[in-house]
Image 1 (spheres, rainbow, N blue to C red):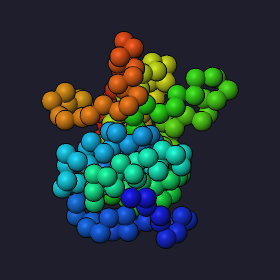
Image 2 (spheres, one colour; image 1 turned 135 degrees about the horizontal axis):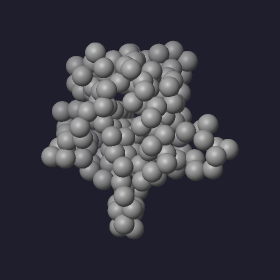
Image 3 (cartoon, rainbow, N blue to C red; image 1 turned 30 degrees about the vertical axis):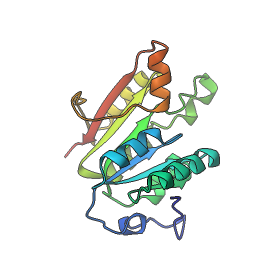
Length: 193
């Protein structure tokens, strides 16, 4: 189902997104075709999932697939990820925030459009619960190295080991890149208390 905030210029309350604020909320920034998000929503019915996606065609696709699966624990917000994270999401609302294969903006003149920067890190800390997690994956080494430099230098975030045994479905992009033999780079952070 598509989520429409009552006001795009006021910080939301968690219960405006899903009715029970006690349930864990996971956020997928740039959810693409929704395969990752839908997989999680199907396998973890006791959690709520919010996908954030800018492109209307992708939002509609996720909504159609969600309705087909009759998922009551999944919503999609059509909006820019940076704005959503910085201005719209409530404080300490998310148990997990996923950023999976974001556009690496490979041209030097476009690097300023990259999502991971100091403001992004500050917003992560504000939106994550105290024990929440930020999970990041990309196939683009230069972008990964730059992002890691920013994330590691932000003192309110602490890198933690990726849990190889936890259930973590592949995104559509990850499947393509893996089939092409590309290396996948990944990292996991939590707020530094």
